[in-house]
Length: 239
Image (cartoon, rainbow, N blue to C red; front, side):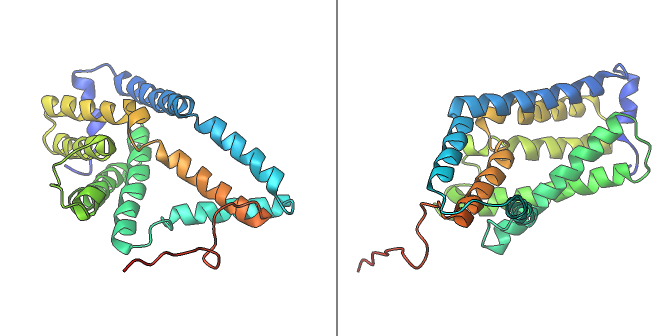
């Protein structure tokens, strides 16, 4: 059951190219949504101005080798979710991140007819990784749940990514197990919602966070950073 390509059976009631066209449309939706988000929030303009200000304040220029080293450090930090200090949040994020990447790759490969026998297993395992990390985050690690005492089912705009993602994965696994057409359309609905909601969800953060982290490293290296260091920070202690 979990070792067969679930998309192969769609030929019984859908054109062979249906899912291929769908994958392309979702990729375009993510691209368009990200560009709209950058334009709407002025992120591109902000980064450009920030870069210009950094260059003007820089105490020393960085060589190409130094810049490359900073870029590699940023990639390495992102690869292990180094921005999270507490291990539960980091572990949850890693499960979702790597699960999501493997899930997307295996989905695209199977939709476009790749015949590797390990793909359905990878698809299933990566979906379970997303489910494990996502449910852990959804019920125990979200800020409003862990620190504000809110109900796990108290949803807000910040949950527009994790909610559709978990629903999409649940129905994907249910469809794989049952081959039910109704379950398939529900799976497709939540998957579509996940990708078309990029301008309002946290999916776009995967593009912003590395850019911000890299810029921070560059500013620290060239001496233009306007952030306080631990040695110069002033802490106010209230009794």
